[in-house]
Image 1 (cartoon, rainbow, N blue to C red):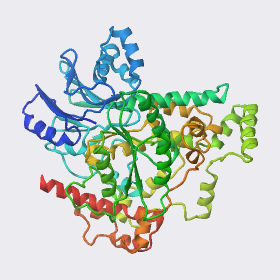
Image 2 (image 1 turned 180 degrees about the vertical axis):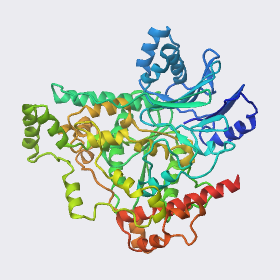
Image 3 (image 1 turned 120 degrees about the vertical axis):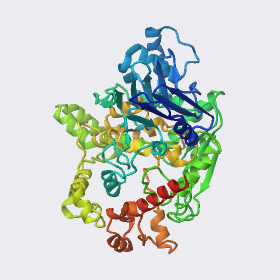
Image 4 (image 1 turned 90 degrees about the vertical axis):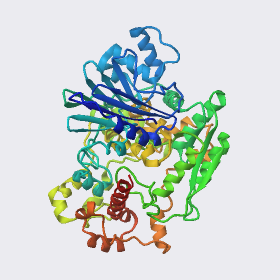
Length: 613
């Protein structure tokens, strides 16, 4: 996960070397292996390299094949061989040593902007045409890599580090109050372009930014398609198709050197681990795959470590059980190193950072099972409606009848009926509008209307995977990925999630939900004979204890509002009301009521970090 930053001066002015040198030093969290810097008339770039693999990487950027078009960015491509085949037709034979960066430059040479649509993987990069003085910034569809930018004083600044970009001269540090309002309502902003800072923007996933003649233009270049559902002849074909794609996704992400997998006792991470273990066993070039599992005992009866150990033993995978560090909420938030780029509602952030520290001691790449819940928990009701509207009555009877015959019950419909019923009855499970928001702030930004918008059923066109498709189209996952960047974790570690590979996601979106997405039936069939029966038979299990609730019940911690809220965030919250609410908050309402506390700690940590600099 290499770091990069750049400056384009519209007036052609030079003199940015000192700033680029400071940026280059700050990017070492991203790339400790090598730093490079290039200054052209009216433009400058710096790069910090992190070697990960498995594909060849360019250690020094920006890179050019012709001295005219330059690339700088953080790039990891999927489906390289398919892309290479297309490029051979367009450009001729390619050397085996061609890096992902080379392939992007060749794609640009062959197809221009249309070539960006052919790229799969996790990437954020910029292409600089030094003759035309035109900059193009590109971010992948799933949002696996971030890209931030600012336009001030006839200069365009960009980087994959928000903290680095904040150091741009003349840039206001004023907070974006719409972003703050969304954070207090749901912990992430509905608007994919906003950051917590008013004059700093992020490039949304699947978008291209063009900068020329001191003007910015954005356009979407990629979107998840809605395709016809798969209609294969035999059940085995569905399973084999998924296995093949998962194999490709893991293969494209598994380095040749050491690798860590965050392993739980569920199906998602164990399926990724099983696939990776098979590759390591069959390819001596791959090596040293280890599992890391966090055990929350004795805080509560945590079963994850036990099930993860069973899976690891079956796979012949070395596993380290990491006892959850003994820390109280907000421990360490006043330390210099515990400062996140944007607000983050994780009172146990210190414990999470220690997990990444442990992973970084072994490897630079971490595999996860993120993404399996999006589609593979499935909705039967929308699929039934889709079949009936299409007058596919025989298919509906055959599909749902077979499920009923086999399981002696109908598949879980998940049609939203329970949520509607709770809404009518004012059930406690329905979240309430936060009563601790400052009235003036709430009215100024119509936060009640915005809160109601957040809790509306997703409006999107996918006929049988509406919830999953809505989540994947939102920038929920890109926000999640950004929180695993080195400037958040403080470790030079790259997190990769094979189940969110675009090829895998598109295949899963075409799956008939019944039976394949009912209780992750597809995963259970795909891993039969590979994972132990204890894992295959295990149902989706929520965490058996909430650490914050348990710490409060034990008397070791009592949540409280700060006596002196940080000046930067004081006006957003009615702190007296919050203090009263915290006294009675429990379960999910406790986490919601802690958002202002997390915002306060974040603002203090940013102020302290700025003073130290």
